[in-house]
Length: 287
Image (cartoon, rainbow, N blue to C red):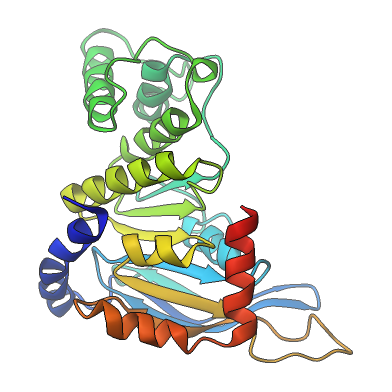
């Protein structure tokens, strides 16, 4: 099944989920400011469980900042983010997994131990490892995840022995082992060759289809956003003051659902301001 067909196949189920739980994640008038610099302003968003939101926009418009707030690495300066009706925890926890563009793996651990560590550390914080039956169970869960991401034959290898695509598969396995409800991806495939990126798109859609995670993914590639997402969120700064460049922040200026009528959605994207479309294309070509 193609990437586009895989995403389309899940949309009917997502529509049913949205009707039952229209506000799994709520962003209410969120601002993020650093001193006198406003990075994000007036963010309001409601996301149903199981949606795949792709975040696009020019560099420096706060997409990664928003992702860090969803992760709990940063607190909003103003406003509130709710997860399933409760205030979002102000530090990362098992409910939210994250994959960055640069591989966040432990170079001194084997592939299997990199993933099993996610189960061992919370249960044995002092020693960082389990023993006996608990250790065997953790390692079997890690093996199952690694087989699912296509690394079943590389359990004893070290990250330096893996290709870039394989290292990202490992990073995805690390994120999924804790069974998060939300998966956050910050340009995870930006450093990969086009052919490997396509393979990773297929893997990600397959995993999303199986787990029904709620996904937020930052990308500079509009085509990637269309291929993977059920919804595109466009970040842009609508107000500018040349005398005070930090006075105004970016907002979600376009929120485009990617339903079955892909042509209508593409027509909506075609109406994006020239400066924004040009910035996205330039960023993608330079990636």
